[in-house]
Amino acid sequence: MASEKSIRLPSKTVLARKLGIARSTLYYKSKRKISDEYYEIKIRETIESNPSYGHKRIAIALGVNRKKALRLMKKFSLKPKISRNKKFFKPGDIRLPEAIYKNEVAEAEVKEPNLAWAGDFTYVRYKSSFIYLATIIDLFTKEVIGFSISKWHSRYLVKSALLDAIKKRGQLPQYFHSDQGLEYRSEDHADFLAKLGVTVSMSRKSSPWQNGYQESFYSQFKLELGSPNRFETENHLCEAVYRQIYYYNNLRIHTTLSMPPTKFYAQFAKG
Image 1 (cartoon, rainbow, N blue to C red):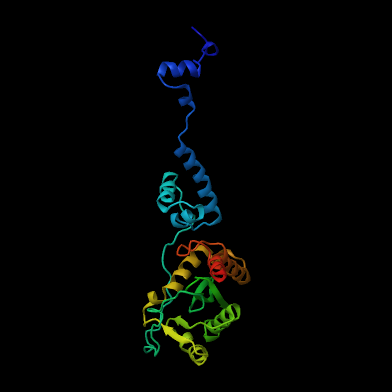
Image 2: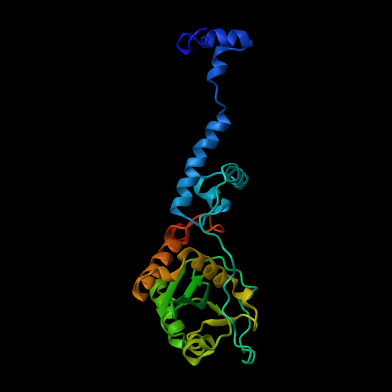
């Protein structure tokens, strides 16, 4: 009986002849398989850097179409490391009467920066307390152009975010949109804007979707920020909020723009 060492496998030339195929076929690896394996690595790297990216942003980041990105993610069982479980809405005060301001931006054509800004605020629960974040978004560039953090929600919180946006952009918008919260209806905010010639726009009462620009931002922002309680102190949490806003503005691909907001703004400014 021949030992295992004495068994010799046929050469590739002999094997190819027996199979009736060209010898080069034994070395063949499909171009599609090679391509898929390449993109698997690239997708993994992209998700590692951007844990919430789904197939739409993956497609933009890698310069492929959405169908291909979706096919590859399914093939290799690749998913975002973090995904949205629920939407976050700030409850309105149903006792307040309807505001005198109507939704002006609903029919406005926003085709340039600083034409329309939207403001809102949200809370981040930290252990047994809260911190509040107010933001101003340019509806054309999708950039967070002003923000403010405080332990209290008040007209000063939203006014501070507004002043931050004015300082950054060096001008006022034509429209400023918000919900009908007391903070935005106050003399320090709505009347302040109106006196400066800004058209104040407000969502209908109990209609958060009419400020969907901000609602969508906060939903994704909280998702990507992760659990606030993992931070040792409130200061560490606030630092993380600053970093997350920087990431959103400068690094994270916005699907509507196919690039980060600051890059889009810079391209538009160049003409």
